[in-house]
Length: 460
Image 1: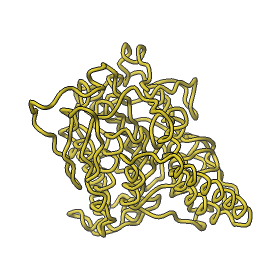
Image 2: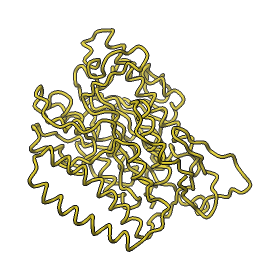
Image 3: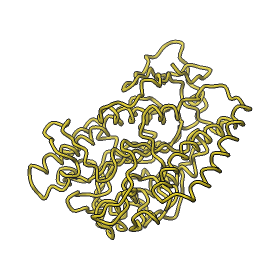
Image 4: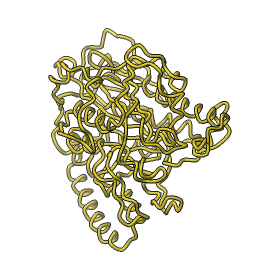
């Protein structure tokens, strides 16, 4: 059992196992943790969760707006968390209208910029993704600037139906317009990346030697990269991203901790419990558990997760009433039998989101809980999969961002309201102030608690 130690035992101490986190009862030996005693505010965390192939909007978007609305059929699994999230409708990604199929919608899910139509030689999503912009400004405060997770391996090659490289369907996080961020799809490797060295004594000479080896490896990789085709370059970049992640942890460990706020002590589950399972459902749950641990231990404050690659044809026969593949059902052709199965898959994804929210809400932190101090974006890059429509996107945001966001409502924005208005608002709640992001033209003020937003300062 790997233990993160503080000088005092916190009331927030958790007993964690794979798929479970139990809060200990209040004990006489427990005293307020250092962070709570000092009055330092817990930081805001942000996660961006993507699911492919859109939704059947008639069963997703609530009929009523405002606070007094009824959950739609697809969102009913979230009923216990209705006060903890906001449903958005009317948000638009105008720069996705110019591309056929899925790729021009998914690749820019978090950038909002135009996607270059290419077979792979000159990929571009227009700019940095909003999660990586936050990581760029805040990542120095945590061992990992950000963490990118997925389930499916990267797919390369060309989709001849639409003339786009399939690489676009494998990424939502972009360090720059032309550089996707590698995703980790093996839960065990995620655990080792988060906690493999946590609690170990820093050996300055050993780390300096390892840094020298990393420098040599990076130089060799640069020389090799010039000899490779575009698809192989991306694969090499993914590998080197994992190397750089080790480098970043070593660099963080060798410097004074910049944070005033410190996470509470927790007992980490044995890493052996995070071996990659054979079941898709089990792997999803383990990845969600790892997200919670990453936020709880303040290993990172920025996360992204892809439930599947774009154009995923995964068979969802494990869901009652479903017996076909996801992508096939999203092209429902207005046939009732396909729509019914498509909706059940939407409902299943909502249930996984509910699982994550339950885990976050169960962890006390400060005056509230870990969910209160987070912003969790959950959505898809198209609305109705049958039309590949990038308008009226299915988007939810859970958590109050440390008291800055008003939740428990359905916000129906005016037609053609940029999705990037939401992203600019979320970046502001992270303490990343910008005049604009992507094609944004303002903030979504209905989701803000104005007084809190105006007074907010990011916590280190």
